[in-house]
Image 1: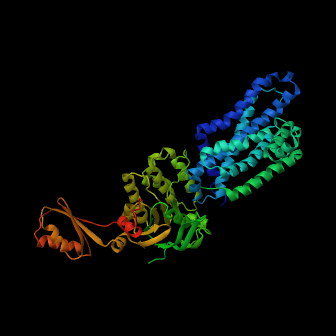
Image 2: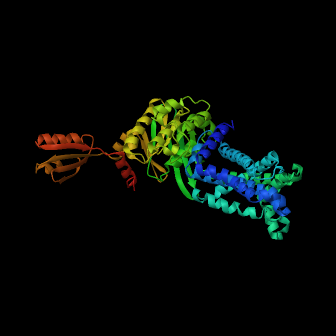
Image 3: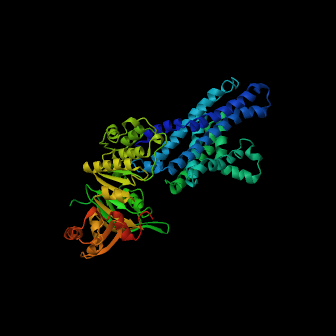
Length: 250
Length: 306
């Protein structure tokens, strides 16, 4: 009975999200366009590129695009939750036999669904510009991205608990989430950072996201990334437990 | 008298250091429309939401259909219908999708969603997005959703706030229709006219406390026993004659119009008798009845709109 209405609500929220032109286009199109842009500018010159550049294109670009997909999913979640709370929609749904966690799980499922769709679009669109020998472990990478998104979506609920009004949802979310990218190891290896920043980086969930995604892309075995998955599971557990205490329905 | 559908006794709710509702007790009987009336911020919604199981209470006993609204909330939700104050649905949810979702959530959706939509005049709006509905249409959709599980008890919180008079009258008819189907209605309103026209019994709540409970008629008789007769006459001697009527409190004239205030069940009869005995020629005659509005003013010392 706990799942009563979950699939129906998930499907409904998916349709509703697609009816919002800006939200749907923004979260689907931006990572895809970014990835294609990178592919067009550097992809075709790849055989002659220095190793650092080719590493960025092979590994860095897809990981960055994937991280952006996850980020936009989280930002979109924060915005939707704030709007739903402000409009009394959350409260209205809660005054039905829907369990509170069913209502929130439906949103997580919608976001994970769009994450997969965006990733697939990105891979298909990028094919033209990247060398044919570029091996892309689609299934492994998708699973890794789902784990990452699932984990930081739980941060989204926590952030949504503190957002005062829907107007501030997007900026507050962005200010909290995007700086994490700088320290995530995507642009500078963690080892080269000053010790203090290294500690900060190790506390940020995005660091483990980047390590996991990059590793899977390089062809690592999953067993080499148990630490990353465990860290992300811990983030999920902590954020979910905190959200359960501080989440505001109205 | 059958057992009450809702029983509340010694109920108290605080938000931080603010006492929202204190020592509230009342019962709602089977098949009646019961109204909780009072100004904004009096504690109406807090009381209703605690009865619905949406909020926890600090103290007191609440029983709804024999269930505890907090402990048995999921059982209760199957049997009640709820319309919340200022609630919205997703902007781009279609009317039929909302009805479909709600229908799927209840164990026994006894009502047919499309039939209810037609009953409430929303059949043509089946495919419309929620955001495109007018205020009245949204409220009617919320009534449809509140009735989808054929509930025994329906909660309506400030149902007609923000609607124009025409839409309001239409909604009142619908609420009477709910009662006609044998259901119990518990509503809140700050509109005295709404309470007077719709409710079988009302509880007046002010600063989180219930001031009095009864039928609108009996509240008026109890708290505002005075009667007022307004008539028009050119007779210059009329005023003195009226002052001689027993139990007259005041008489004053403004041009041809004379207003006579007094009390007692036979006061109006006495005025008519005086007119006939003194052969006073009147061109207009009406009685002014005190309303719940006056009761509220009397009980709280201020108008409900202040």
